[in-house]
Image (cartoon, rainbow, N blue to C red):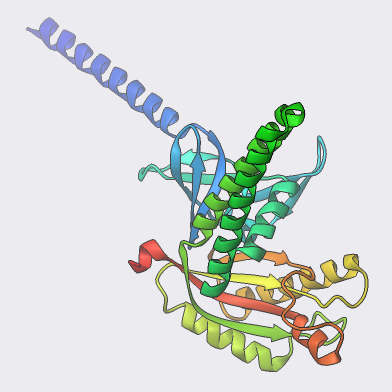
Length: 308
């Protein structure tokens, strides 16, 4: 009897050790680092959606420890804020999945050329409803032009092969633009304010700080809001200087929203330097130049959350 009790105890101990080992291995496997690649299709608070060809739509969680980097050669990387993660941006995300099957990001990496492309899309594809209709009309006109060009190619047998390849490339570009246009159209604009700057200045004046605080208070009452910050410059001076001015203006407004208005960086989209794109007035007059030296801040909410 004593021998049976000893044998039973040993068997129970062995079973416990085996189960503990299996549990440890499952925890290690669950916490294993994962890497995905794809395009950002949406941002909502500290979460963003990345569309991957392999895995489809994946929810990525951004934390204060998430590193956002842009490679600058083989061994150097430029560290950026999470505000640079905007819809349309091609990214590589490394992290681990949590219990909700969300990928908690350790690092988010993207190229400078991809950021420029996404910023161009943001600059041109966050328009008013009238601008949206105009863009759609332009796309339709381009498609008609392509159809006419295809007919001409059929009549020109000698150059048909080269021209057909060019048309195929143009169609792919239009399809991609249409796709990203739809992604950026997923947001409602619930409020906005404009901060104007003196010539050559990047300092936010007090009267605009009051407006920014009011806008921030409005945004904080919106479920899963995002603030988009875009800086612009007039065409006076060199293109390089204007690009720098628009970037520093947007950065100073972003810093004020974070530090003085308690808006977390995870709730901001900051393409930043729009340069001299989207001029709202003529640069031939002092008044027009003053209107173009600006930073525009908009409150965005995903239409899926708003139910529209």
